[in-house]
Image 1: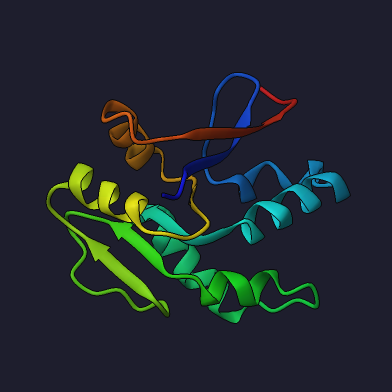
Image 2: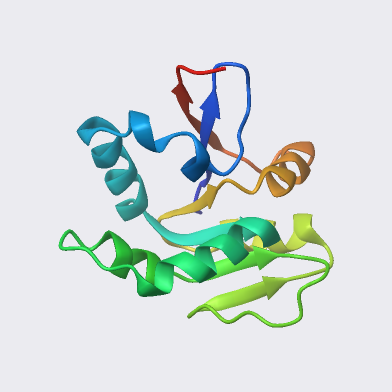
Length: 143
């Protein structure tokens, strides 16, 4: 059974918006190593629609020597959405209907951690069904 892990960038006052708007000035080697290790201890992503759409635009063109981009682009992405009909990013799978049931099935599969980046509405829904096993918050010193 795999763990469902939520990983969020958040400000001291609890804002968890798209991190590219505010977190990059604080990026350092320690955060980079943490995010690298986190990704490589996982083997699938679970994303909400908005996070998926942002990732699907950005990640297919990203490449780096360390292999982070290759790993992101090789993962299966499980996308929870009531409105999307088609997913364009490689290895993307749409989850509609009973989120609790579908995410429980994903957790029952063998493998490494199932990782959620961002996806605030999805995290809130999963929280209500007690499906999240671990939270990782990178708290940034801004309000």
